Image (cartoon, rainbow, N blue to C red):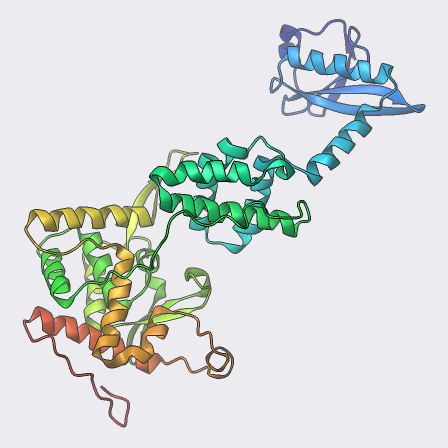
Length: 425
């Protein structure tokens, strides 16, 4: 099958069939149209090189305009007439691009081969956001090997003027991307390796005092946002990470002879280690009340509505972390409006608050297990495999009772609970 001339109207008139078929264009030497069953039209160029018939794809219509495809065809003809082999040139160029890709292309490879398999989806999403917003505009069109300290310095210095902490984060990501490039033998040195973070950061140390906990708890009980109130209380009572709490399902609540526990699998924790957190009667009551009030949907303890971008359909998912962040911000604003003195805190500070007060009332040795922090010593990591669940239960039970006594107005001087011979408190 063939056609005389190539026009937009002619291309639009070509109909797909059950199988792909090919059309020769008489007005364009060597040009072949390949019509797919889907209706997509590919342009191929057929030529001879060293007495061998060769064929190279030029592109597809209408992804490329007819004007662009005509120019590509003319370029291919000129190359063949000059004795070149376009297909061989394409393969050589691809090899060159693989050995020294554009920075934008390599960032995608970094995300696919390193970040996505090893990091949490939330971290990968943040890396992609930083790449799209900061790295691509600054260096995306440059070859990987051509990027130097100067380009990196220009980017980080610009960010550090107004957002020094963000500059630290973007620098860390940039170092990671180039370290990955060194490991892949695409460059010999990391141009960002010696760059010092522009901002000094100190570890966060905010935790709530017992007076603040009492004021906060009473305010939330009187009518604050229910989801925010329950999430804040559960983080405070269990020491779990905010993300672990707001993504809880009823399937992760395990009822045992010694009480109820949160049982998280390895894929639900930051350090990829399974974790068990005791639910004191006060914590268990919060969860039961959510069940009784019909707030638990599809087993999700903190359900939220989400609309699919592709289908437009609404579905039920767990509350997002940024939603909890906004709710805590609103809670702080309401506290201030009510004249209640509670200094600014973030959801994660509640976890630090739990750990700090558990240590204060005499259970410091159990804090690492409550926080699910990896034990670094050889003895703990390799030899000592005791799970310390009874100690976790006693510590979190004592912490819960401490809060209850504070709410009843008792003095903030709690003697650590003693354990009998049978293990009871």
